[in-house]
Length: 92
Length: 238
Image 1 (cartoon, rainbow over the protein chains, first blue to last red):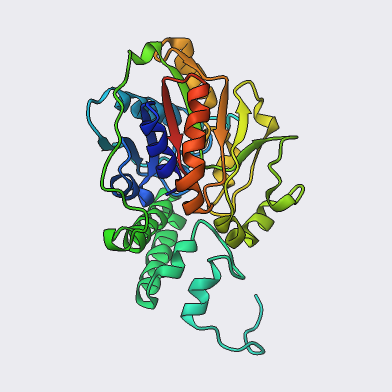
Image 2: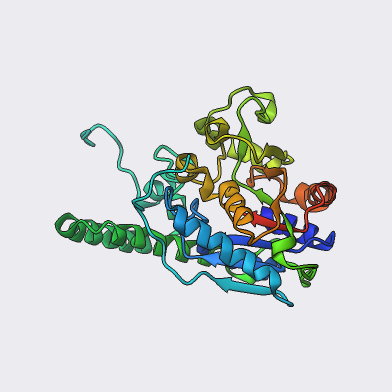
């Protein structure tokens, strides 16, 4: 809920916004009226993907940023399932 | 394993609730508190079935999937009913993108609870609060006003800290990009997909007073972000 309040305030201040919400909180964007939301099918605490899965994380960020070009409020689900235990090294 | 002979019997309800800031606190599974005893039994059965199969083929993904599905169902059932959701809005503020993303200065804000080593927000005046302490004081966090931590995007990963009593921080602590994707944004700036990354990202503990955030703090932060001259904002709730 917290980010929903902030996202609305920033949008009202004239800055386009997009939020990345995990599926467990996927009901929040619609109820709170946020402008753009990407819903990821990830467990709570892993909004962009598994630790070390830089490829997925980057893909999620790109998918979210792509929503900024929409001309009306949008809630979209990221299409790929969560990938635990990604083989790439932790980025820090 | 301890014998239960000396201990009074624990009810199923007590067991479920023990994962929610109780004796077995586990923020990955705090949703168990909200299951019925019958559903809790189904959850255990599903998990044990998945573990049994994984014992043979090593596909731990099915265990993760069971936990994920029950988590989604629990949160959807607990909070998904619009009649029970306390912070509904009837409108949807919308600002159109003013120019191509490749020319935009992108800001980043997350409710992850990140801060930079040496710039600890010190909640309630306590120095070096641990993650465990933060979980133990979750009730106080939920009543207090949030504080925004500034994270220069030049901050090295080893200088980042994360502490948040409301969600399992283990994945974010292992890889900060899970919720604070500064490096990924920098990569997109380098490739020209976005114009540039704002000089600072922001983080706060999302387990906070919703009333204070809604009424006073969020508009203040919005003005602060306007001062950063960002064109768009990426938000990452946890």
